Amino acid sequence: MMKNEKLTGLVFTAVVVAAMAGCTGGEAESLSPAGDIRVITYNIRSFEGYTRNWDRCNDVVKRGQMIERFALELSLYDPTIICLQEVPSEASAARLAARLGMHYAHFKGGWKSKGWPEGISGAVLSKYPIVEAAPHPSLNWTQRPKDLFTRFWGRAVLDTPTGRVAVHAMHGYHKNAQVRLRELAEVLPVVQKDVEAGLSVILLGDLNHRPDSTEYRRIASAGMIDSLGGPADTAPLTYASIKPVERIDYIWSAGPLSKHVSSAKVLFEGTFRTNPADPNSYALSDHLPVLTVFSPSK
Image (tube, rainbow, N blue to C red):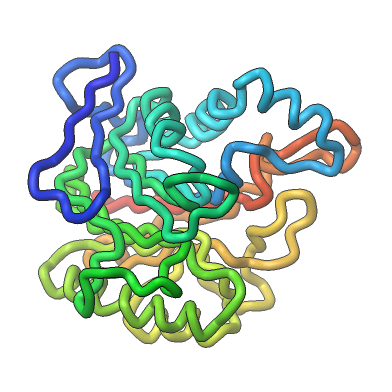
């Protein structure tokens, strides 16, 4: 049974749902160790897979198995929060959330690419109740400028056992650094406002910049902590899943939770990557997921 609960007072078009398979009571159970908040960001490439030989990958898509395969692989890491980019529809996000026993908030994309009526959208999936959600909640405007957040930016506030966490899920513009900087100029003041209100904050997603970029330095100068950290030339790479060549996917944090990063890694493993020895192998996406574990009880 799937239970849909639209929050009252939602801004714009974000939808928050308790997506539960076979559960009652409206709350998802966390499978992670007590107290741990396990966060994954993943550009899923619209559930189409990625490979050098598309026959096998396309067959999986035609059989309708791809979302199930995503759910099985992601569940091995016991995530309590997942940020997805390049979500083809709200229905697909809802299906994955239901399979994982998670609540979700879906954020429509600004650019209607590939004929998707909801644009290149994104979603936050959460084992914790989602108490607020809104797309591009800028402090400076109520109508999104056409050239900003053509993918998406969404804010979801989660009620975790260790306090409320404001999750800023984002997919940065892929072609122009100046556009990305203008996007960050909208995002970071909202992040700062959340921190000043005493919230823990997570900013995550496919941000489409490298660690040696102005965009990276701008986020760091705002007081946020990069969970992977390290110099640009040694940081783990997140794109592409066949042979990683760059790092463009991040999990940043600020506020109380940022002091409790216990581990972080890029998931260059399992079906998130291809097998070079097998010409028929495929990865679930062209990006690799990033996993960060926060342990506030330690």
